[in-house]
Amino acid sequence: MPVPARPLIAAGAAFAVLNAAPVLAQGAAPFSIYETGQRFGSLQEAVAAIGDGDGTIYIAPGRYRECAVQEAGRIAYVADERGKAVFDGTMCEGKAALVLRGREAHVEGLVFTNARVPDGNGAGIRIEQGNLSVAWTVFSNGQCGILSANDGGSRITIDHATFSGLGKHPDGTGAHALYIGEYGALKVTNSRFERGTGGHYLKSRAPQIEVIGNSFDDSQGSATNYMIDLSGGATGRIARNTFVNGRGKENYSTMIAVAAEGKAHSSDGLVIEDNDVSLAPGVTYETAFVGDWAGDRLVVRNNRLGRGVSGVEGR
Image 1 (cartoon, helix red, strand yellow):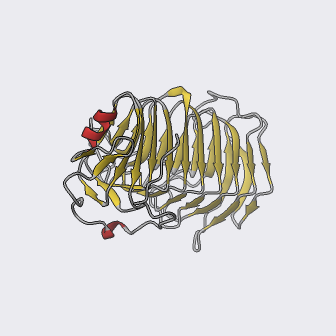
Image 2: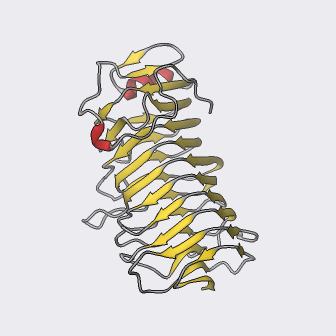
Image 3: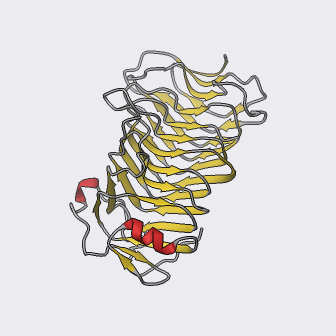
């Protein structure tokens, strides 16, 4: 959804480090609706004011211990300054900082950290229905960055995002850095996955997928599994990514798993090309770049495989 710009946003501003954000949000009404000029003291009040309409909520710099549920409408959640509006650990409905089940949502420039709930599925964003687009957003030090329900008629698009320090909590609960259910399509571009603490970096049940121009850096990971898990198979393209497998793997058998949980969707024509693939220094095991449980006609070509990494292995 289009997001109106306003003068307070510094175009092209870089992410600030998390501890640069002030402890409390500045001002009594840090949430403003661009279209009406209304200002609110809580994010949930701003969401309720938009209701089933369309609106853009600009969020002032600060560290927020609150959350919101979107039940309707098309809403954009945009930081006044990228990387300086931090949602720190407060979960709505025992699910996420943002629980989204309206018609559409866009999230830009925010930071989500310490997303944890007792069942292990705490997330920065829980998308339950409708289209979702995410840009220039950081998810760190929690269980899930983004977790979805099923909505086969909608799509999820992620660009210039960072997923860092996500997965299992030391108590054993947790899931995956990015976990998408039976959505219509998933597109992830120009994003970074790093320092996983368990589970997969990207797990998707969507039948269509594009993963292009991303970095999957497991060199500092611990107890991690696949870089990409296409659980039921998928078509689409995985290209121009960088993959580095680390030594702290729970499962190092393959980096990309195709239909490891059964063939729910065809993977005929899935293209995996032009990726750079390696093992971190000091890693001594061998692994496959692609583990194929589907038995479909995959197109795997022009990938640059480092020592200890084979191409495609049937399972």
